[in-house]
Image (cartoon, rainbow, N blue to C red; front, side, top):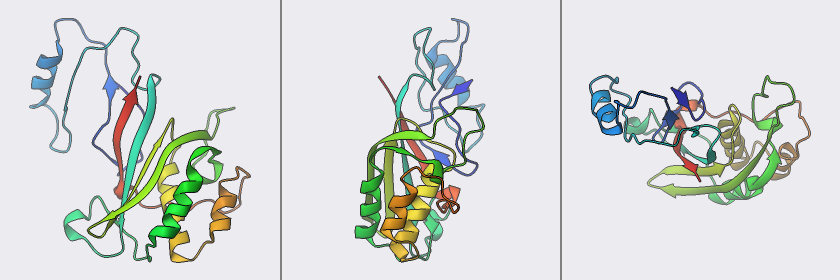
Length: 200
């Protein structure tokens, strides 16, 4: 089974995709029915369908969409999927940071750099937006690709800007692509959710 990509330990997914080559006798409906009794309680196969022989879940993806959930106050019922930061969340400052992220940038200061030689840390971001509902601040981001810890470090650093421990100018400097001694601060994995993967 080839997944569209890996996520950090502790990250959730409601729209993970993968592909697998199987004999023709295993049609999509049979596979989906069989998986109901084989998968653990925290995993579900929502849909199975036949793809073309050259389809690749990772390399054919056009973009990936994530959301991150954070709150200023304790939320016991959502504790496994929301980061309680305790830092003041100011929507105007959060959104100013989010607006800077749009477009193509070198995210070297917001990731664990790839181990492969000549691997790029440039990503193109199509959507970057904050919203708030019932005390949960949600950050949504869509991009052509993401690096290890990238979304978590973006969120953690934006929250620091919101709380006043980092300036907007300092955040902009981290986005410049010049390697910094102190990189972006990573938010916990539990608040991050892979929402969907888009294909042409």
